[in-house]
Amino acid sequence: MEKRIIRECVSFAHSLVFANANTADIPATSKGLAYVGNLTAINQQLVSAGALQKPVSVAAQNALILALETQLDNMANIASAYAADVPGFADLFPRPAHYTPGDVVRTGNIYLAALVPTATEDAATVAVKAARVQVFVDHAMAVTLVADLQSQLKEIGTVAGTHEQSREKGVLSTEEINVLVRAGRKQRNYLDAIFRTVYANNPQKLAAWLSASRVEHDRSPAATTPAPTDPRTK
Image 1 (cartoon, rainbow, N blue to C red):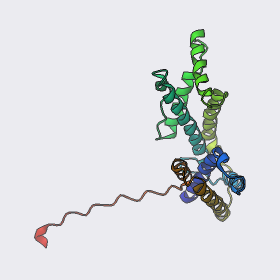
Image 2: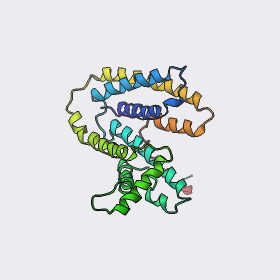
Image 3: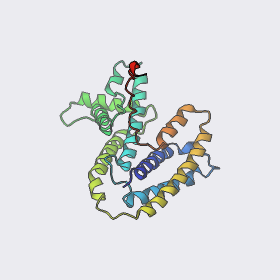
Image 4: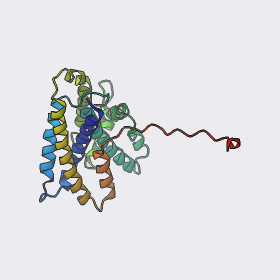
């Protein structure tokens, strides 16, 4: 599949993760939720059509990684704040490295190790880990926090494991996929207009949206430095 199509699909997936996480900010009087629904349907068609084949980065997996990374970032913020009362608490929940999907997954497993008791741990350790979970619940995290993290990590592994199977599916013609991409781009642009308006006075949220919705471009080759001119030739 052409790289430009894959880059657009990655942008659609990231845009949907952001939009679904911030639906409360979309004015009910606008068509924002309809645009989210339209983009969701288009993105699903592109996935089914095989438009996300190659390169190594998979749009569906990238969207899951982004969602997990956001969750871990929020948890790291809570841990950092709580460390004012319990020194060292933040050390148990380091902020995820924003380098590779593997870094984010490893951080998720570190968090789970600090929260989930093992079969060999004693009652005191089990109680300590339950208290850690409660810290996050007390600061607006879901009571299903641990199960949610486990589910996210499992889903990321499932997407990665089944990617090769998806390559066996037949794909639509290039023109049919181009039509879907153009339709998706239109919905994303409508959402862009709405979020730019909604977050006009919220630079942090606006920056987060722009980062999520951007389309990556191929890196330009590094410019070559011209060789110095011998002054004797002038």
